[in-house]
Amino acid sequence: MNWASLGQAARDAAYNNAAAVANAPALIRARNEGSAAFRAAHAGHLDLAYGDASRLAFDIYPGTDQNAPCLIFIHGGYWQMNRREDFAVFAQGLTAQGWAVAMPGYSLAPAVSLTQIVHEIKSALDWFAVHRHAHGVSGKIVISGWSAGAQLAALMLDHPLVHAGLVISGVYELAPVADTYLNEKLKLTQQEVETLSPLRLPVDPKPLCVAYGTAELPALVDDSRNFFALRAKAGAPGSLLAVEGADHFTILHEMSAADGALVKAAMVLAQ
Image 1 (cartoon, rainbow, N blue to C red):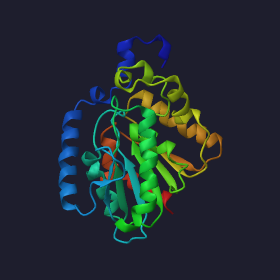
Image 2: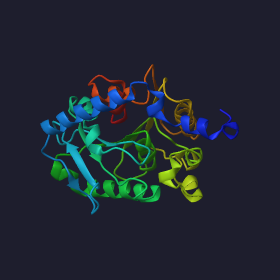
Image 3: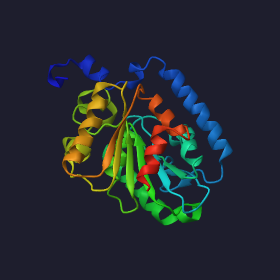
Image 4: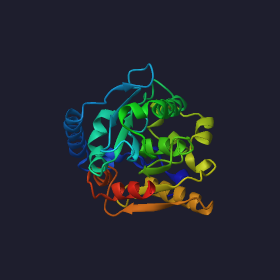
């Protein structure tokens, strides 16, 4: 893709996942309905505040054993959409395997900058490090995220709480995003592009699985492959997981199924 030669409409389309997936509204509706049901059935450790703003809270779904691993999953939505509550259904695959799953919320653009969002996620991990035992979590921590959440998770791999990472369908280079409709709310600065793009940062040596769907937008496929290649060149451990036929939304079905490819990837990372 020759980005410089693209007009504005083509640049916008390159990152518009909802427009690229014909049945996106139905998939999102099913996700939200499934998540509401899952939360209702697992109401013991929800809405745990880690900060003062309304969205700064955790939902924790404890495992069957306090020493079981825990996946911390950061939702996506291009840093300006969605809620942790609407992704609860994707905890069911790992909880069926005995794991704990924790999902932090965060503030959204344009109310806050991406710099502030990154700060909030770090604060969430700091809070979790102190309070997790009270909520039935003492095992290894795998940080994970989808879409914009994958970028945030990649930035948190160096946090001392984190053992390994699983990033899904992420955006790891922010410069093109700044040229699209998404930047109307994000208002990315050049400093943010340079310091918050995982493809521009030193490689963390912890294990990381980089996952994407083969039916995703080319820009996201390229980012995933490039991010893995950067890490591989540096000798960092991890794998590249291409989920055959999955688009930006259906790839998360591999998280909600107990035998899903993303569930299996997380289990390998915790070994």
